Amino acid sequence: MTASSPKERMTLEEYYAYHPDDRKYELLGGFVLAEPHPGTKHARVSARLVRLIENYVEPRQLGFTLTAEGGYVLASDPPTVLIPDVSYLTFARGKDHIEATTPFPGAPDLAIEVLSPSNRPVEIRRKVTAYVGAGCPLVWIVDPKRRTVTVHDGPDASLVLWEDDLLDGGRVIPGFSVKVGELFKP
Image: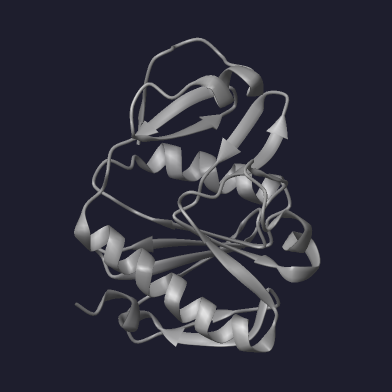
């Protein structure tokens, strides 16, 4: 993810009106971040995550997943609107916002960022800090290159899981689990 014009801070209203092209734009601490389209591998891993989570939560009526078109207003001063590659909201929190055309006002219950070549470690750390600081109880950073998932379930708590490890939904999606390697199958 790279910074893009404008270089000055934006308000939420300015961000909502800012769409110079078809890239994904986020707002982190008032500054616009643009992300180029990351490619097929990224899309496959994201799609697999959506399918696995949705197949588990939908029949149990626990919640729903969103793709990278669904954003979250994590803060208003300075404004922060992040758009995770995949996210999950419980029905209890998100049912009244399912049909909305605006970002969800608050943090997701699970934010998943799938790394792409354009991502910089400092920006990913800032995103994790923003998600957790806004009350997101679970963040997964999925790294297709290293074939790992880094689980953040608190401000200073992280755990790296490898291909043979089991990734679970913790208290956010009770009973959900998948072997990390399953995320990276062709």
